Image (tube, rainbow, N blue to C red; front, side, top):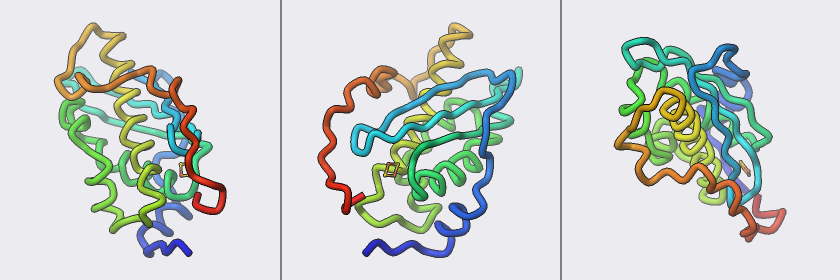
Length: 152
Ligand code: FES
């Protein structure tokens, strides 16, 4: 039986930054290769390269919602390069942890942020060091549904 701490439950019940930014600077989606759930992330970037807003929409589970709620809070106010350094481990630390079968849900948040910044970079002819290992087509390779339903 998975156990969730109060902070995770609070971000799940009252998630921050849900929705889609109209007129976004970058928008990306990512599908989890583990569970097949999708996350859409949109970001607004100002002229100084600072992320001034971030919003997410997901078909993912409560852990994905809590992870993205906190992850969007964490990247707002950062430059794209700084936001690219936010890993799912940072998200997990900030959330106070997730059950181990739910760690991939925090990776969905991390990767969708990268997807949104990737889109922003593409549209503006920019290159970011933090994107060099990012595969924008990784969501196409999601055949590996290894977890059974009761593990999710
Ligand atoms: Fe798919 Fe959490 S995002 S199980």
